[in-house]
Amino acid sequence: MAFCEKCGAKISDNAVFCPGCGNKIEKKEEVAAQSVAVETTTGHKSGFRLREVSAESMAQAGINETVFANRVESVDDLKLNDCLFTLYKKLISPVSKIEHLTIAIQNNECEIAAKKAYEGETPSGSEYLSRFFISLFVAPVVTIFAALILGVIGLIFGAELTSSFCWLLYWLSLILLTIVPLKIKYRKISRTTMSRYNNHDIPILENEIKDYENQRNKIVLAIKDYICYCPPAYRHSSALSYFVDSYTNTRVNNLQEAVRAFDEHKRSQDVLNAMKCIYSVLEDIRAEQIRTNEQLASLQASVWAANFIF
Image (cartoon, rainbow, N blue to C red):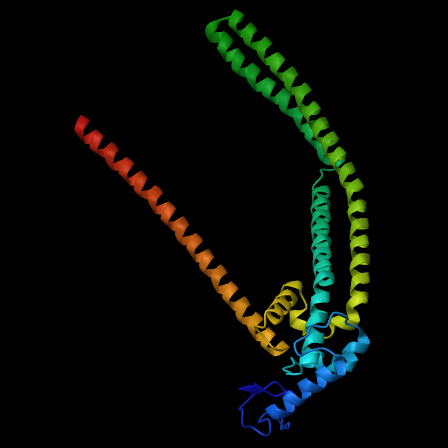
């Protein structure tokens, strides 16, 4: 079983033309001759991993942006594959830095949004003023009702007890009129202080975001001429690392096989994560069932004790 160099379709060993695109299929003898030619022109044995990658070397290997932007290659050219996967190895570090900078930017944006939301919930001065006047009116009203009740108590129990209750209510009202304004003032000061800290932190976070974006843009500009050789859906560090590891350990021979292997690996990881979630849910259900059984056992013991006593 082989693959077409032009469209990547599967072809039989005896096929002369590709059934998908009509491209002429080279025989094994011709492929072997190409390997000999590569060894002759480059001075390296078959299977040698290129260490230096540049725009010129990529062009000499026949890799161009249009090909890799539109489809996934399945090429048996050893020189091309060595050059391509060496490029992927060099792209892992900058792509990983871009991902970390993106996460840092998102975290700062979430923190800024949370600080602005807290600032929006700060009560205004009119709200504090209304609360203060409410406290001023509540205390006298409570005092009047208490005085009426004390009048009734005085008619029943005498003037001495009534006088004691009056002094008690007087001090309670005084404490209420003192504590409520102080508490309101304290809350206002604390919120003002927190808002001041937030207003100080927000510009710092915004400057960090600008710095992270500048760093990310520099890295993107540095790799823009090379990242185009990677399929768009696989331009992240995990896919590139898997491609390089698979090719280095000879599990795959070209990009199409690497993409297929990575998709299978990703699907297996998704299935494994789903199974872990199901197992976690089942464990929660089991723990809840144990607690329910314990409660039922305790209830049965209580019923048995009640029946025994009565």
